[in-house]
Amino acid sequence: MKNKFMNLHIFEEGGNGGEGNTAGQNRNSGNGNGSQSGNVGYTFEQAEEIANNRAEKASRAALASFYRQQGLSEEQITTAIADFKAKQKAQQPDVDTITRERDAAQKELQELKNEKILTGKGVKADDLDYVMFKVSKLVDDKTDFTKAAEKFLKENPKYTGAGTYRVSTSTGSDNQDTGGSVNMNINDRIRAAARR
Image (cartoon, rainbow, N blue to C red; front, side):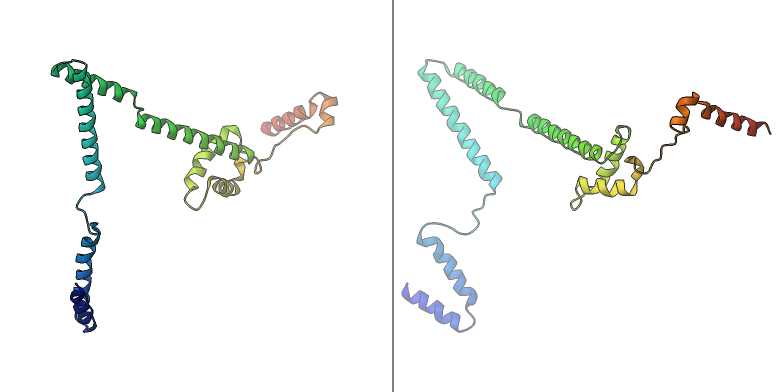
């Protein structure tokens, strides 16, 4: 053994044996403690399938042994094992349904949070769905909903009420005393202009 390592070492110093040295080391690494560092030859899915099959066989063997001790025939054992597996499967939670329900609940919660953000920024209830749709289109990896809402509402202030004006035809206290005669005066002037 000592000569092997020395020869490899000398060979490496010669300049042509770099690959030979690593091959010797790889060959020796598997022999020392029984472990292999190379590719085993199984994928994770294959190993998992093998483990599940072995667990299934062990479970079936244990159940069959138990039912034999109870005095059941082979046919009764097969039926009892099938019933046991059916009940076991029925008791397992439906992961797909639970995942869908969780995703729907998270989506609904996020929509409520987004509505709260928009109403906090002054968006009217009538425009809420439209504004939420438009703001959602602006959301990406770099822009969250709040920043997208600020950007959209800055460009479209009419949805916050900031860009709209309320027109009043009354003059405040004058209209209260005259019983709405200001409106009548305006209407009379419009009619007179239309007659001309």
